[in-house]
Image (cartoon, helix red, strand yellow):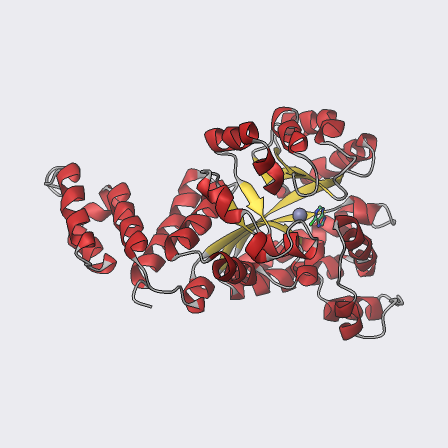
Length: 396
Ligand code: ES4
Ligand code: ZN
């Protein structure tokens, strides 16, 4: 160790900080570390963070577009673009209550979550055959790859399909095979999270979990979505207990429209690893402190929150406050075909409206890889890729 790394990292840290303060470039500093860069990653990261904090230049869009990202909150059915909706309706011999793609897009004005869900459940009816689920997933993963998403965890809603007579294996088969092909052809990694619809009964969720057991290896976690208010997490305590016994990780939508109490229940009753949305946690200081202390990530979806009127505008969004409270905030697209943007558009919107700097963007992206359901080694590979991007793009 000492043969290749003959310096004291503490002294080195001070020496490097002086150079950063004097304006030296990240790439020069990192290469001055030489071999020790790999052996002392925290030092390399200190350099990156300190130089990012020193950057006063505006954040170019290209920096955000190019940064390697992860997405942890995307409903695959919510990536159904109107063009594909028409295509699937045509090939399945179904009629849509719209005459054109433009007419569909014009209908995407929502008063709240419930008014969105009506259109969302109407949209999914064009998904009938395994090939529809395959094509839908391929289209999303291709788009994700084009935005430099390196890893995506996708929700799917089996009950939205089995409830209208589509077999569970048709749904998961199409999605899974698209994930395998996208990994091979595009190099994008992905995992699947199965959501229970909370406006249905716990018995229905239990039946869905049973149907999923033969496909256990294809699903990393279970979640809870759909109409939140009036359907508290505690309603699903038993099915989440069973899911954890079967080896699934757990997440839940909570604190999107629902009160902080629902976030407490998701943590204490459903034992979730992450909270989806969670933005209303800020109303309860004890809850905010708990989330920060336990490092529970929030998968925040800014454009979704504005479209569904959780916040009046992106400028009014509390994402920056959540970060300032020390929470592990991540940025996500939710239902990109309905909410006016995929992941990059979400980053661009918050960067502009909340004047985020490069360091904020770095932290948000880093949080997503840290919060992902990946092994420590897999995370490290992505984090190294992220750090390389930062050190190579600081002059842009
Ligand atoms: C959803 Cl934005 C949102 N919230 C809750 N459930 C959902 N399902 C699809 N999108
Ligand atoms: Zn969601």
